[in-house]
Image 1 (cartoon, rainbow, N blue to C red):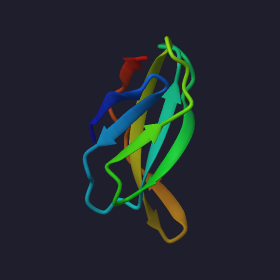
Image 2: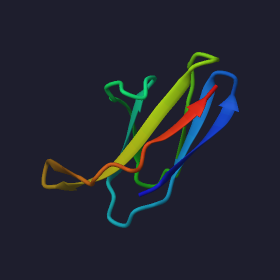
Image 3: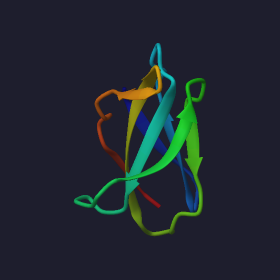
Image 4: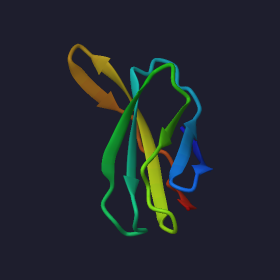
Length: 89
């Protein structure tokens, strides 16, 4: 799973990823520090290939990673994380 980042506006970032067969959802995580703790920020449906993260701060750098999960019964089974990508606004 690979991701790309692009500026959507002065305060928003478009996070894009390739599709994964069998995915239930894509879980997106973000931090604003290279050594910071990642926080879950969005769960995208299996048909989505991008999400626009709005309400960010101009002049800051944001770091993202994504992982996919599928359901086995009611249990979420997660993949490994994507490579981390960063973008400065």
